[in-house]
Length: 496
Image (cartoon, rainbow, N blue to C red):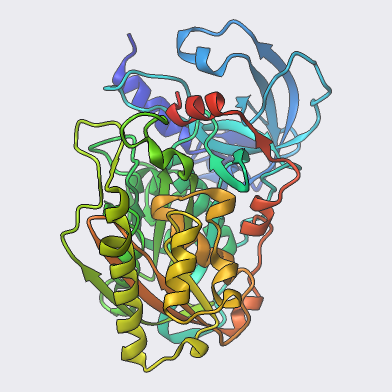
């Protein structure tokens, strides 16, 4: 048996890859230090901090673990190595993830790697889930290195909007017919996807992590019934102000099926607009390891569509790339999709999920917002609806009068599956990555239970100034994708 206090401390230290650097002698230390051990008290209060989670390292040496202890057996076999940072001044042990060891000892020493947040090993259902950032993937493959460069804002906008955005999906896929779906590696879950997407959004925005005053995490597949995803995001990315142990940031999880994230877009906007809130920037992430019962079981029809991933947005009033023009939300008590507290998988209402649920709410929200703004379909350049499957979003787009060139750029379900809380947000990211200045985007989410959020965004000239490598297009057509069979897919979905 393990000691829970020790596990909590190991996760806390391992999640925060903080180092200290002495500007006087150039020595680096793993962990935070108030002064340099060589230079003494002359450096008290002068030590610089480095966050290795945003840096590249080098795999110096490695070994293959073929007979792991019980907790690591689901990973068997795996590669464990020594990773150096800062030109060899800091060396850390870590596990190589997203990597299938097939028995050949290929030459991987000397390759650049990136820290990733993952589960450490398997635990029981009632245990703390141990996560750690001492897992690594190759920097020249699926997940490229992008420098996190904090930039000084150049323009303040009258209306708040999206300042930064990003998405994260795993490199692993299952392909069935014309449909591909993103699936988690065995050590991934909704928590790790949220951290990765928010990290990428920070990089894209150039916002100082200490200026994030609020974090919202929307999900319906949190591994915990009681413990937020948002607090892990805040801890790993060092969001807010304060000391090492407690940060001055508010973090909360939200749940409303597939609109858990979009529901709080308006809350993030309101906080950043209100002058006395003290929140300069707010972060929202929709993240899910979308769950479905095995095929042939009750609820197994969902297993043809579920995906994995997250999409994150930073809202504020400085260097906005897409202003929030207006919104409209609607709700009804419609039980088209649900999961009882003691059940592993959700249930599905069959045909009842169509006209009485999805179409009624999406159409209603879209029409109400368009009427409010006196918009016609040709006043909108991009339409992004919730995407539970390939047919529903196309049908609702056509019923609302939109053409293929308006809805196709945001339609991503056939490439990644239904990401639940990340579904329509992923489509929004895909559109923002190709949008031009002064284009209008209509986003309409849907959450079973039931409700829809409709938003219109107007892109600004700064949309072309902020581009990134890890785009939705790159993730969809990446040369380093790994395809697995159905049995492996189900095993990865269950996780550690």
